[in-house]
Length: 389
Image (cartoon, rainbow, N blue to C red; front, side, top):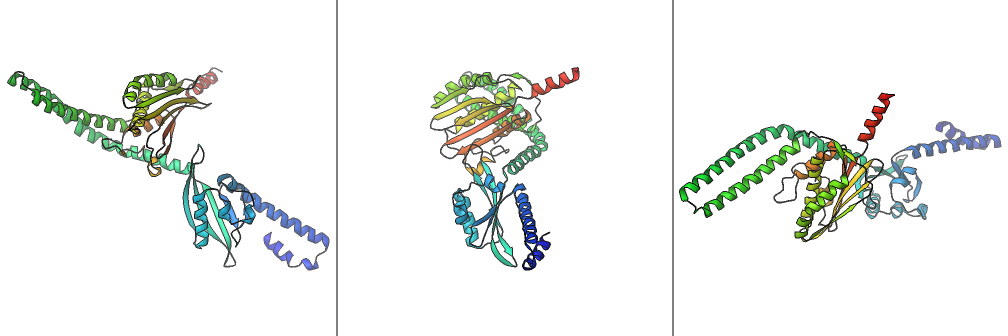
């Protein structure tokens, strides 16, 4: 079709009015088809001329990229982009006349942070650069999926190692503990009461054994398959009970524990034991993030699909480059941490068919949002009703 139009245009001087109108109609249809193709793409495109002014863009570009629409076609493309980092990248790439360049940017302007992949490439026609094409792709879902797969791979790789390490460490620990008790009894008989300094040393041994045993238990918890016992569970009741249990401990650390539980939260199907431990880990992490006192907020919300549990602290926050690593086994920023606490959190939530989101800002605080589905019972009831019919 394009070749036909190109040849017809060369003969316009010999065409009558009707033929010219027919040709214009074909040209219009061709451009409408091109626009339809561009608007159907999920990737955003900004097409600029040799003066770097936008001459064409598709719907995906305006949907994904924060653009300034006022006088957009009279200014260089980078002045029309609201995000400063993206605008600077586009300007520098075009001005330096680099070839295809791609960079990812994190947009945190709303409650749903997005990751955009921006590509800048020359628009070449007849072996000459006639402008620029800026390609914009929202890769948030892709990155989340990659992160999820990496976490699952990390957990899987630990499984085979866990059994050997656990047996090699836990069995000697049990033996040492028994013999320490025997040493205590023997010393009691030999020294007849004057055992203060010796017992002090043995107390240190006991404490270190207990700490080492906790590390092994955490390790086993992180890698062993979990067996859940699902029952109807009131999330508000669980959260309120934990808040009451921890209030005094938090108060002694100059931390205020605010409880903000929404009314009429539906029950979920969950394992109370594991969910309690999961929330306890998150609350203790929040407490550790506020070494000089502050506020921790424990809240609940719900919608048609999920019950949300929110743990928000006013602590030091997590650097952007570490946020995506915190659920990986062994990753920790604590001096005495095992790096398995949040791995356990992630494992329990996934075992309940849920998800967890993290938002953090340095010097402001961190917000964990746990999403637990409320569909399990409804699905079973539906299946039962269909069976009865």
